[in-house]
Length: 117
Image (tube, rainbow, N blue to C red; front, side, top):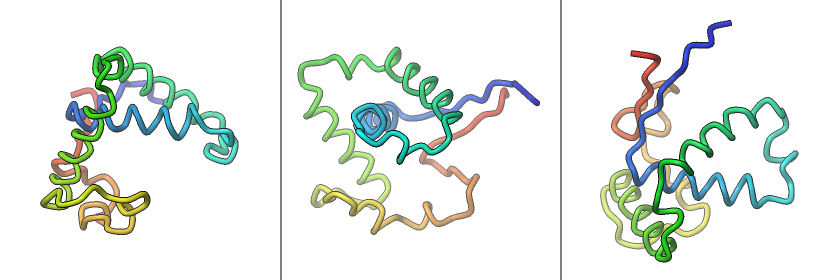
């Protein structure tokens, strides 16, 4: 088994939004077994969450909510070409851009993976 580390690069907005999502979905859920059926998933989730928590000062700022919403709007604008209105719950997956339907492994400009380079 290859234990070489993999580096994932995210923009600050991507990291901030992902950190909030991890907290809301994983750490605030009453149904953790329903979310993650395989306990092995906890290892990478904790690694990612811990790294984000140590890196993002925004998560401790008093204006967390407005900063998070601004980051979400910028990401939506980047993905969808404009931020006319905030997406409603579930809308992001319904209106997923073409990039999300491309074969797995093509990150484009929305995030990059670097395998120890």
